[in-house]
Image 1 (cartoon, rainbow, N blue to C red):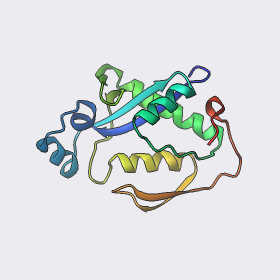
Image 2 (cartoon, rainbow, N blue to C red; image 1 turned 180 degrees about the vertical axis):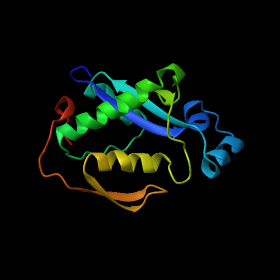
Image 3 (cartoon, helix red, strand yellow; image 1 turned 60 degrees about the vertical axis):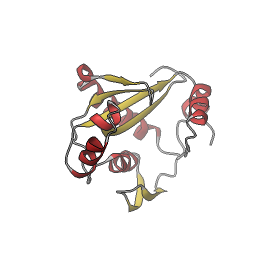
Length: 154
């Protein structure tokens, strides 16, 4: 990662999320049966680019202070997971993500919310609540404030 870069990771169903095939058949399949998972990544070259994109997409950004060693470990794990499947990559112009087929199937019991919870737990965040529909909260367990990517201030 270059100085000042921010990396967004995402997880979803391959056909629905990566390929944008959001018809009723793929929607039902993504919810009811195990399907091919997709791991996505988008690299922002600066904090300004990230903020502008977030504003355009009307995204809600939450900031959580975690240990820099945990951030680096998770980043390396996600990059390795992504790079192992690089031969399957596709670009989704609607999301701005580069996506690859993931080793983890997308299922009702392992959807994007479950994946996010695993990432938060890897950062030593405690997650409580019903994960299936993103109705959950995090509790910060780490007291040390860490590396701020690109001097990002919440």
